[in-house]
Length: 252
Image (cartoon, rainbow, N blue to C red):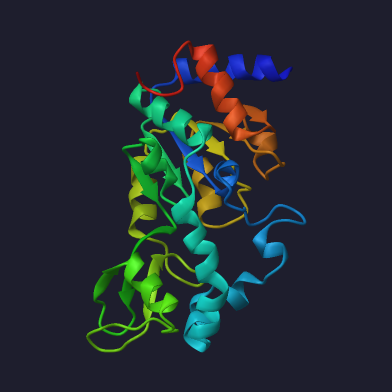
């Protein structure tokens, strides 16, 4: 099947199903300048062991080293802008083709692109909290402390160590993960966009869908089971999909 035939098939699948979701991973944000984690040679986890650097035990063992390594890559997200994949998914929701987006990403770009129903199953970078007393702060408070030389950033109340509201390795999943699994009841079609489907339990979510479409540059463990596989740039796929559907990528 040619690429254009796949785009036509994708459009028809969206038109012929009425309870559709998207599951997105790091690959949906690479065109916004945010590096992914698992691409051979370039992914972050090909250079660093995530259990040693981005886990709950790493934070507790040496919080200053944890922030020295991780905070710079998180602050990059604040300057990133949504790309056409984010805009396309938001437009599909607006037009009624998608119920919403379940994302493994913590960058907030789906909301900035206009998506209304987003389940952030790995948390987000809008807030942080004290590991001792639980007091919540804007994430910018943590960054400001770090930039002023306070590493690790500390709670103003009890001087406990602050941590971002993201799901680290060894953490329990966010409440959004459990909300997403409930929302997926009756899912007819899932678009998996930019996910390697190698991180569990997120990689189990396609099993809740009657049919699965994979849109990812590299092969995934679900390719053989999927109704359609498009190994291509996510941004290009959504530009071409919206053209096939006959609607502009962004609302007028």
